[in-house]
Image (cartoon, rainbow, N blue to C red; front, side, top):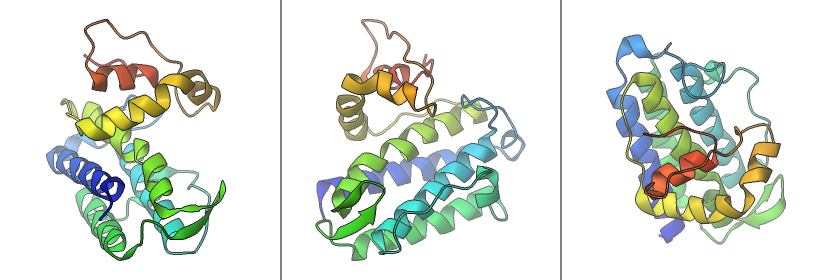
Length: 187
């Protein structure tokens, strides 16, 4: 298995760890994503995995749901477990070098996961914040995302999907630096 696929699996496991720790009464708590609760964040992560699965399975790109909470069918933890299991199964049968249709044209499956990992990584942190606890993100994934985001932080904010970058302190960890670049205040 490629290191990119292995990294993606670790990030999904990190989301699972967060989901398993969310108290039932915190799914409706506000998240760092304006207008979204923990349930919206989880729905966005689930919908994102379904979009990635569509790419990797040859169905091609599909648009995200308008209301991400609609992706959570049934109990949140059960919905995530089913999505995660399906994605992990797909990763075991996908050739990292296979070519798939994407919004960027035909690309390698490995490229899809290398670029998409930022979503479950950072939104796993957002979900933990909504639930009231700190999440420690996969260090290698943080490093890869930090290297990709740092030179383009303004472009990320310009999409409207991320808040403007914040200034991280000189003592900030790589995780704190990445979160600050994506407009998140991390302790």
